[in-house]
Length: 206
Image 1: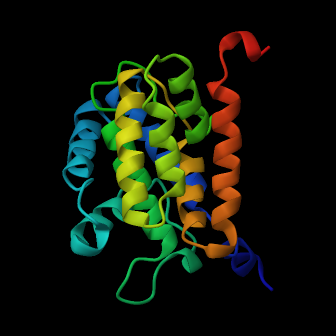
Image 2: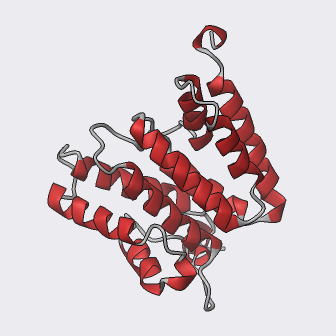
């Protein structure tokens, strides 16, 4: 197997989404990244416009999401038929969530190595609301992907209000795995563990 073929066997979804949101984040926060602030704001506004419409019903949204990736996905991650591939769908969802999350943000919301579930647990730990854990549980238990996305969008809006961030590259990889029956429970198990550890009161986290 030649070097090019070997390279193409490596998934690029996680690293591409991470590089893309980092670039946009630097731009919109005015931190001298490669994307000017006005351009970053324009891209994010477009992503937000399409964030609530299922990708299957908005063909242009997939095109827009793929076109802004910092670098292309691996060849095998692209779809070949009339429907988006799991990797394409995951990239689109992650970018859409990020666009909603960073709106009006004053500090980074893409934080490498901190999982989405950890951020949700931290949200519970700092809040007196009794509805947050049931929201997270409903997201985990959702049997319909559309319902899970709705719950996730709601949680991300709450994270935005508390200025809590997480790793969007990791989220993209998890979203792709959630579409595979053989990997779904592994992701949800890990999310449950991360959430439980972060949701403990500070006195129990030492």
